Structures are given as structure tokens and as C-alpha cells.
Image (cartoon, one colour):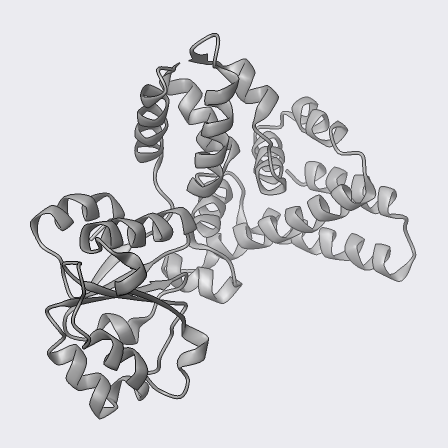
Length: 323
């Protein structure tokens, strides 16, 4: 099920095993919290949290914990984070027996950033997708939070917040709190407040530059560059631009799924989705030329042939010339 469906599902039924997986940490944490709130009256007596890395020796201690009857709560809850067992691990007798017939007085919550096909194939596992939310979900969240505080916000402002935060709900939740506090007197979150308070991270600036280049809007591309002054920021943006163009190139030529491409490039699915969208504005040949040029400027900087400033500006200029 999708994360948005979890709250309603818990009103109807609580399943014995939940697998919360996906790149959005806010949804993973919030999902686990919803399940615990539904099941626990006395968390101190009925809740155990374990790191998946400590389970290499087996699940016997966890299974034993799950079989303990709850005390002053409807269920006993065990949460395991970042656990990626192999198919062989899950064939162990005690593990297979538990997943085939889990305790009806306990809930096992597995919270993973990455996908685990082995866990998904087990009986009685309910998967909750915690991928990055789309803009409609984010706008509903921002409007709900501002409404609770008696503050108004327009759809366009919500979209701007989502854009600046790259649809990352952890950032959006924090930035929304900040904006609500700022709107204490005016009772309205404005675009001016978003521009003033919401930080644009490096990835957003990279997407901005690529968008401007695709439209041959070099004036605005230069404005983004003018905001970057420190050597560390220049180096980070240069590297980010290189990896984004490289992702765009691979996204434009591969026939693999978003998940498979993300795994191949060691990045998140959202980054591949964005790369595909931006790659559609370039030809694969031009993208390959840009990747090669940026790689050469990166080598010149690292070998000492060019200063960071020269490599940064000449590299970005070369991207514009190939746009």
C-alpha cells in the first residue's frame, strides 16, 4: 500500500508484519509512529527497537520478543531498522515458522531505506511504500499544517516550497514549521517568505541551472552562479552538475526501470525521475559531449592544470555552449 493509505488501513485492521521501505525518511518514521500509536498504550513495557546490522547472527531473540504477551497494551511492537536479509537467511526454520504463522498479539515493523525483494516475498508481510511524495500530497500536508496554526497558504506557495525542498518531506516539514512561526502576525505564508527563509540546496541549484540551459536562458543561469561564492560551494556544485548530466545521459539511453537505473547509478529513484525529465530537452549526443567536457575540466582541476575558479566557470560555460 502507499503511505497515504496506511492511516485508514490501521483503523480497519492491524497486520502482523509491516515493511516500510522507500527513500523518504519522514514517511518511514511517520509510518512507524502511526503503527505504534495504534497498538501501544504503554510503550515502555511493550516496545523494542533493534538495528538490523545486529541481526547477522539470527532472529531468534527478536522472535522470542514477539512471542511475549503484551502488558497493558493491545499489541507488543518490535521495530527493526535497515534489515536486508538474504533469501537463505529467511529460510531458517525459526524465521520461516514465524512468518508463516506470526503472533496475533505482536507487530513487527521493518523500516528500510532500500527495497528488499526477499522480505516482500514472505507470507504475512504488508509493504508500505515510502517513496517521495508527489506535489499534490505535499500541498495537502502543508495546507493541513498551516490550517492547524490558523495560517493561510496558496497552492502556488505550496508548490514553491516543494520545489525548493526537492519533494523531501523531512525538509518540507521543518521548513513549514519555520514559515508558520514567521507568519505569526500576518497569518499568511507568502512567496516572499519562502524566498527569504527556505534554503535552496545544491541539487536544486543544479536542476535550476540545467533547466535554464535547456531553455537557453543564460542570464538566469548566471544569476544562480553569482549566488555561489565560496570555493567549497563551487566544487560541490561542479561535481553535482557533472553527476546530474551523467544521470541524464544514462537515463536517456537506458531501457531499465527507475529502480534499476537508480541502483546502477547509486542514487535515489527521484533523482533518476528528474534526470529523465530534464534529459528529454537534450539529445543523447549532446549530453555525452557535456559529460566528457566536464570530466576533462574535473581532471584539469585535480591535476593542477586549472584553478578551481577557472575549472568551475569554464566547465559551466562549456555546458552552456553545448546546450
